[in-house]
Length: 362
Image 1 (cartoon, one colour):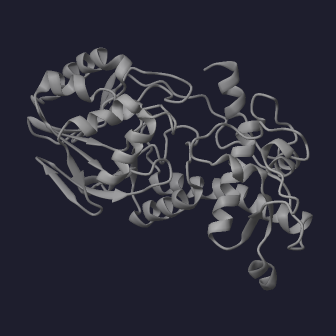
Image 2 (cartoon, one colour; image 1 turned 135 degrees about the vertical axis):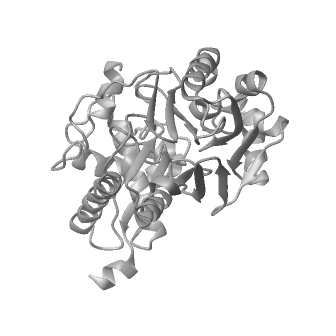
Image 3 (cartoon, helix red, strand yellow; image 1 turned 30 degrees about the horizontal axis):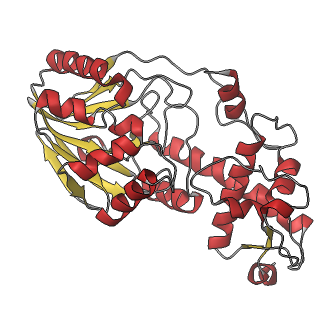
């Protein structure tokens, strides 16, 4: 992990604690985790993928389900690793590939897998309209260009569109699909009935916390996962989690603490509806120890909380009365906030305050 990545992970607001202080445990190239689950590493370690992407062989028969596929740059090495794991655990065929979400470290090995194993059914939760719109925008440079090659695979090939609540069966294993957006729009988790376990994708990791695109959606997804009450979690990054419910509850508490911190600051700093604060002002107050390497990430965390509070009718963001935009911001800083494609830049320049409805309830 680079120094800059480490600084970003060490980003902690005033008065709160880091989610984990323990060192990331190592993981083998592949390992059997239960009678019906084998974890196979994508061999793509990084500051964001941790030890690499965990892909999972699921089932007890010769034909298995594979969850996720690693990333493009390590596809050939990954397929060799997968073959080794299959041979050692009695698997001879991949009958279905399930993708938890479209990010490149989960979809990048698809083409190599299909070439190597034949045309196994590939399944992912998605709507045609969302997919086509994403690819068109990225091809035209009107949106973040990452993951374009991986998304194009789904445009050029046939695949099965998963439905929320759908069951998928293989010998020795029953999986149920739950749509859980928040990390990504098309994200799913998979409940393994025989073990009361969840394949959590990137919603819950085996070490640390995860990237969130929409906090509003993500908190609803965590609540759904908690309602399942799983015993064990199989994350897409990091080691297997034995205390499934406790970890989900810790994730929810972690996010709620930061949300309550922003809400309290708004209540104390701009109690009147005609006042308001910019994201940078809030960020600098709540993250006084932020550095030049992570202040933008802190601002992005704050603005995602504010957007959630706005969707819930608790906070509001408005443009200043004089109508100045990016170039006329009062502090002269047009570069506030990270370039997170999930957040429109305009949100950083609005004046945020409690909504009048929420004030009336105080």
